[in-house]
Length: 322
Image (cartoon, helix red, strand yellow):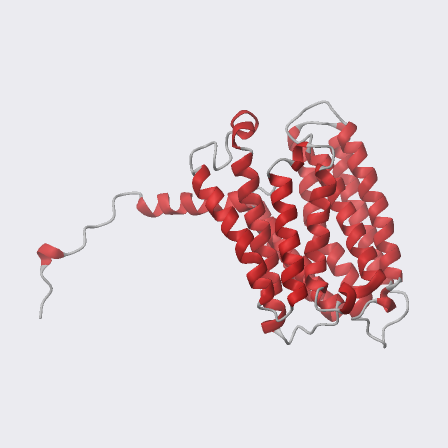
């Protein structure tokens, strides 16, 4: 039976596909999609450091999904709470530009904070759900006002430390002292990035840059110490050498990259340079994860982490991540 042409669906208005793409772009910018992938690297790295296998996606998949969901939720809430500040300092962001409503951003953020622990629980570990719940609370504390206090960088650092521990939550005692050293130094590194980011809309001020870089460099030394204790991680491979020169080299290269980017910002303290230094620090998180996995599990496992960097880097060229 022929369709009645009088009841055919009306054609889409001119420009409708472009409008949909703009809306989608706004949401991807809101959650900082390139950075979401660095959070995925944390969850997967923690799983591998705990002795998990890549052949068990039903176990590590929910952990990675929880990491990504909680990070995206945190970014949405960050912009929703900061909308008035962004109207003055970053008017092109999705909320102040009117492309995403504050109500929608709050809805996405709080839904993500609730969903994250449920996803972690789906990995089969009550410890994972507990760590994810603690991470959700830390994210809310940071976004709801903690960021504007002197403790702001430390709270943000604790968020990323918990994200790494989320992957380690399947190991007894969350991986033991060596894993806690790695997580705390990782959080310290992120605290340094956060410290630097406090100046990313200013010009001519270098105090936060110098302080943040110093914290990052100290954290890298601590991460090298953690890599040297690779044999004490629950996922350590007995056939690997006691010291992984490849892991230490990766961490040294991270140090070179962040110091180069920060050096340019210190010499020319303008928003573009400072944001570039912050972006370099964020993307380097994947290589820190890869270096730790390299030391504990070897190059094959580390390559799975390193592959995430390529996707994050390419997305970072299309979407802002600071």
